[in-house]
Amino acid sequence: MASRKISPWLLFMIITQVIGEDTQSLIMSLISNAKFECANTTCLPFSNVIKSNIMKCQAACLTQSQCRAATFHRSTSNCELFADMLNQNANMLADVDAISMNVISGTRFPP
Image (tube, rainbow, N blue to C red; front, side, top):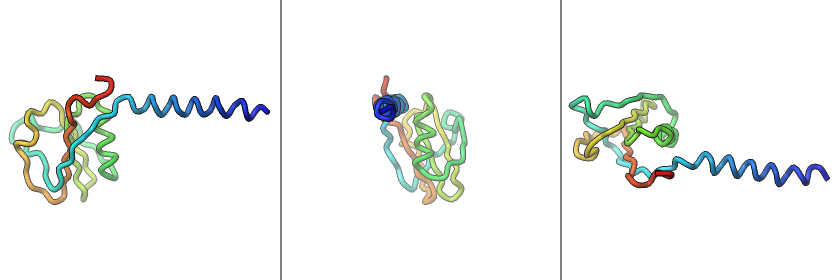
């Protein structure tokens, strides 16, 4: 009988945790085989982290409120996080090893 009372409480806690983790969800656009060409300091990444795959690189960006774009390098598993980039798509450089991502503005919840 006690296990039946715990189950709804446990389910409530799991749902609450899942909803709480999704409060900073964003939508990102992907650009395959390209990376940001940073000829000036306004385009330099604010963080370089090692992530095992592109999904973890996306998550690294999505959990940082200042992150506006990211580039994942498949061969090195290097994930570059960028902030305050103006016109991100204007300066792209072809790179078959890279996948770049842009946060789509207006998709952050809460805003």
